[in-house]
Image 1 (cartoon, rainbow, N blue to C red):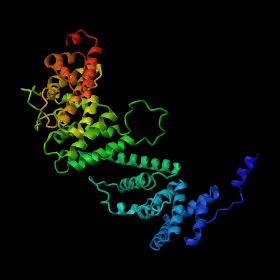
Image 2: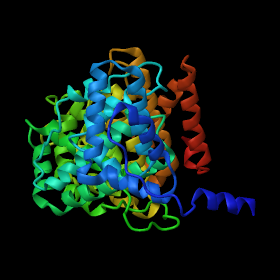
Image 3: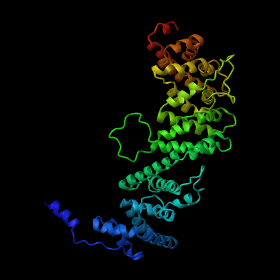
Length: 456
């Protein structure tokens, strides 16, 4: 009973809406009280005043902030922070859109730089004003889409940078919802605008603008990865469900043109390290988010015969006619910073369901497996002994994986390559980690429980 009377007192009918007072220093306390009032009648009136005339009241408060900052009036600046933070606490989309609008954003960031919860005052505006601005690699003709891109950037700045540890939970959820909605419309525009995604493919194929195209494609894949449907989601999404914009992924990679361009990016000596890193990141994002089937099917369909090495000293090389598979092995062998990503990527590609193994594995084993094992024959492939160890260690890890998963084809490999000598050399090594991986390989052979492996 007492609880009901307390609620009635809080929301009693005699409370009347009040207009926000004028934007003067002496009224800041009253403004703050009204912004923090929970009564729905007062709240509705306050929201109406804040959003009236496209946020004219908020603009006047920002003008007051500019004057106070010039006067270095610290108490007023701290009080203005409380006022604008209270606006965020209202969790109203219209108010947040006004705060993050093009005309108000920089000043709002300046207000939040006087957060009393920070160890010291932060000038967030300098970094934002000194940036190069929005770079349209491919022009966006729909200005509403451009505004959504800008709004998502501002949301990220506020949520992850300016107020990363002090945003109210309700405001965080609202900002994430707004960002997801913007991403959905941005990706819808890209998916429906054939000229746009074709222009991205043209950039990746060209040499001069390749870096811009790769960066844009990676950004789009990241958007696809985190964007959720705007409809009510299923209670439990099935494992491995396709992304919301799976058709857009098919538009980019369905014809294999980008995969062919990646062969040149990864294999050509003219490519810089940033281009290689972007290409590897894109392939990893594609494989780990959508599954390896698309990339595996392309590698199996390249149809390029690669002759076996003619000597133990021969190293894999890339030519303009070489395949993407050759380029992947080249990066795996020679680019140590990328090797761990390539190792994980190759493991996913090599993990072939038994019912689908014929086409891909019939390309892998006759053409590429001997090149993958080539560095095990000599310790002179790399000048750095430590780098050579890490390369051989990664190769043995892949070989162990293949032994566990690839059935009869591994037996033919063991018959044509001196695998036993590689394992014996590793077991006799003074490097304990090398010995551990050799033991794992031998264990994988034993677990197969087939007569062939004990003889081996």
